[in-house]
Length: 344
Image 1 (cartoon, one colour):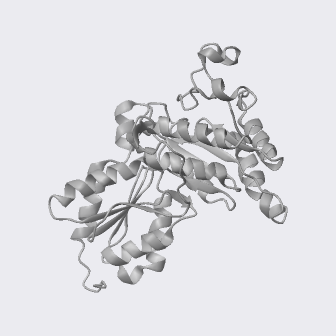
Image 2 (cartoon, helix red, strand yellow):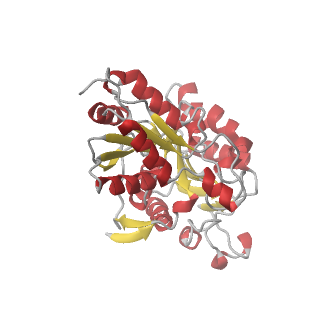
């Protein structure tokens, strides 16, 4: 097992899946990259974030396909390619660009299996980036995974570390349904141990990144790492925090979340999305509807504010949920004393 960045882990998953299955192709704008654009593979940088580095040299332009700047054409081509027997990995460079191509995704790709009575499969993997902190401004920094999660027929994946990034992406590519993989752009340089050989992580199975008895934190993507930091800090003071990384929002491992809430009686949800109609709202609703009798305190949501993402660096940092906000939320649910709350 080697130490790899998330960028390297994703690159390795793409390479190994393309080696394993010749029907896997990559399609998107600037997926080759390089100062010479599409004219010189020897200068290829592997795209805006360097994720595809080296793939054009190994697999050629028939399988690593640079497109014009037209997200609707990229997603339309990916859907058609999947129906014809290929397994396209289509890149939506920033999730913020979903407005240009969302009809192709939610109204076409997500519905093909249903529309054709299960006789058609649509093995499209859509890779996209999310998250603030990169200084990319309000139109390149949103975390819009809740919008895709709301669409029946789509599977949604949010890796929080290099190990999960590789295993979940490989699973996505092999899946016969459309999968959207949301990669936080601030995590591409995060490092962790990743096996060199191929492996899969099943969808719908949450990861308990910390085990605890006093409070449950459910967090997504980059927020998992902040939650882990808070859990480790509070453990030194005798507070036992359980951290759950759902890994996928659709399918969602509801059982693991509910089992944890029933054990701890307290829930904090951390979500970089805006607060309304978010995954934080969904998890809070799940706990209140299915585990109300076990709750010893109100559910607390830690989210970004309901504003566009600031371009000013200082305001952008204030916008992003922080470890201190998570710690305050944990203390809030611990300090709440309800005499009528269940004890077990």
